[in-house]
Every structure is written in structure tokens, then in C-alpha cells.
Length: 183
Image 1 (tube, rainbow, N blue to C red):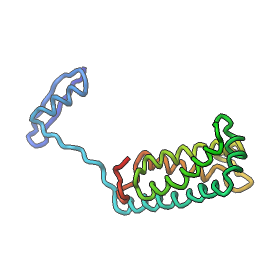
Image 2 (image 1 turned 180 degrees about the vertical axis):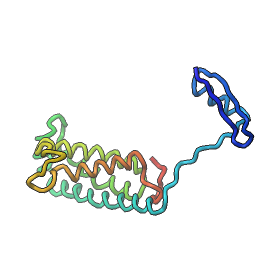
Image 3 (image 1 turned 135 degrees about the vertical axis):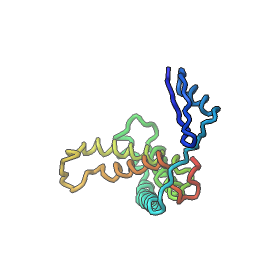
Image 4 (image 1 turned 180 degrees about the horizontal axis):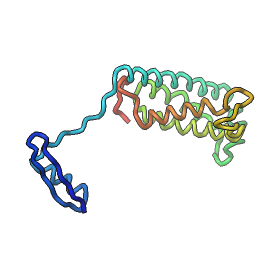
């Protein structure tokens, strides 16, 4: 049971009731004379939207070359990466082309803001596989306090990109995109 009291700010008149659920209480108050204000989506400032646009374009431009790199020697990537580190995946060459396609085509969609969440999801999954590969190859390298000999963690770029793609999956591409609400 839920005890509810709503006060109309204009008339200072109160309405109260006891209901079995929040849904029932909401329905009763929606039909009452208590004014209901629709909550609008929070709007971000233009400078924040420009920052989101720059982040989107930057991460997309950096990922494309990884897809192109896979196409330089797809058989080598399939044999030395996919088959070796992901033996449970059938047809390593198919997965190589799928990863290359994802790293070339999905950034275009995300950069334009068309099917951006779907593109971000595909890129996030690709980065998860990249991180698993790096963890198999080098381990965690003392993360978070270790200082690797190379100066940076081997998985650092794919982990950062994955975090950015997770953001775009959850938040969308921002208002400065061709279709901000399309998937």
C-alpha cells in the first residue's frame, strides 16, 4: 500500500489517497484536477553538443584505419589473431571480414549520426574482442597502477574506444547529427 499526498502549487489544495501501487496512484492523480506537467528531456548546451560531435568524429576517424589494416592481410589476421586467440569462432576469415566491415562502415554511420546506437553497439562488441585479445597477449600489465615497459597498456586504445562507444550506445549521437533519434 502506498500513501500519497499531492499539493497543487497554484491553489495549495492537497489531494491524498492510499493505493496499492504507484501505477494506480499515478492513474488517479492523472485523472484528478491536480495539474500535471510533462517532464521534457534535459537539453544540453551548444558547447556540450559541439564536444560530443568532436568526440564522435575523432573516435570514428581513429577506428577506420584498424579496419583497413585488417584488409591488408585478412588471411594473416584470421590465422594469427582470430584462429589463435578465439578458437571457438568458426571460419576465422569470415570473422576477420566482419570485424573489418564493422571498423570501416559502422564509424561512418556513427560519425553521421544515422543508426548511431546500432553502430556504437557493433563497435563496442568489436572493442570487447580487441580487449580480450590484448588481455590474452599481455595480461593486465599491472593495471591500474602498473607502468608497462612500452609506456602504455597494450589494450589502452581499444579500452578507451570501447568506453566511448558505450557512451554513444547509451546516450545517442547528440543533437548535432543527421538523425539523433533514429536507433
